[in-house]
Image 1 (cartoon, rainbow, N blue to C red):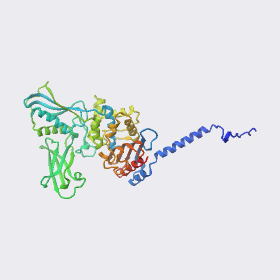
Image 2 (image 1 turned 120 degrees about the vertical axis):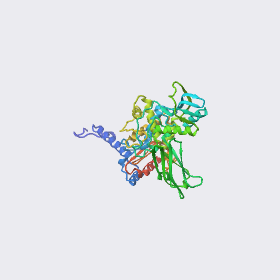
Image 3 (image 1 turned 45 degrees about the vertical axis):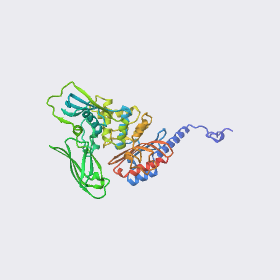
Image 4 (image 1 turned 135 degrees about the horizontal axis):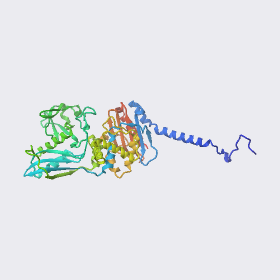
Length: 492
């Protein structure tokens, strides 16, 4: 029977015949399926959303990306392309650039050189500590170099004792610019003359007879003294006793004095206060002279110009490997190391650049571009994250971490990150979370920022990259948000 005009015969098994509108319908179904998946990926887990509500932080202030390391669709993606302030999580970017530039086992070398003539126990000339920008030139290593000079018979330097750093160009930076507390070590800028992180440790403790509080400097700094007005008292020791003290730095014609005032309970025992009382160049000179004199050396003014053409290598010392240095930087979030590494990356990749910090930031952008990593509003100022201006998107940082996972140095890189609930800046966080010990996470904290980024394994054994930023005036109340996120991840 011929079908009537305007009607179509049913196809076998009841299917309708092809129709040109079906591709559009199929496309609509695919788009609907994709949109549904998008919404599912964008929806925060209920526990995380509840923690955000308690902290009074809107979801618009949060960026999250949880990505399986073996690839595939994200497990969770929320505002992942929005550039945000990552705080100290930015150190992961600096670590990546340093590994790509130098390699995991790279070492810097410091050399002690006698420039002049050695006459008996006297060096007529200069004793020069020649640094290549070593980010980990500590007081202990400097002491070993200077002790070698003493062991070789040099007691008196008739000339200068100084640090010389060639090839590293870093413009002056104001350590007071960030928060007005320029004497705190975390504000130390990068410097060609960086030694001991530009930090002196003030050791506080009760005296042997229990009548007063003592304060000593480590390392010794020539021309720097302690004005100690601490009052030893009985009672329990507050956890933040050091933060409660009144500290300052005063300078006059007699030199520099670190001032201390406040109450110090005897039950506190030994505590430590880190300060950066001098600019890097002056700090280096004061430390070199302080150690030299403590070793029994003498330093006299030169009677004549230093003899030219005579140079003797007295001692040399290699730094720990880059991995060991990055371990200290990331575990304990050292800003001076991070800033120095960014400058060293710039010097290595653009040696003729007038500003190696800016060159380091440029090198990072080039490295990310080489890996095909988008830079959604990336802003890199100092590489440490101690900045109101630095920005990176969670998607870009996650892609960087996935790139690291496929590098030969992946194990070394991951080992530098704090272990959740165990060590570094994560030792007091996530202690009761099921993911404890199963996540290596760099943490970041600023006034309006809480952030984590790194590698985590869920309870099922699957491995993920996780990046989470909270940037809001109530970020300080959002610690439970990150814990809830990790608890949720553990269940996958």
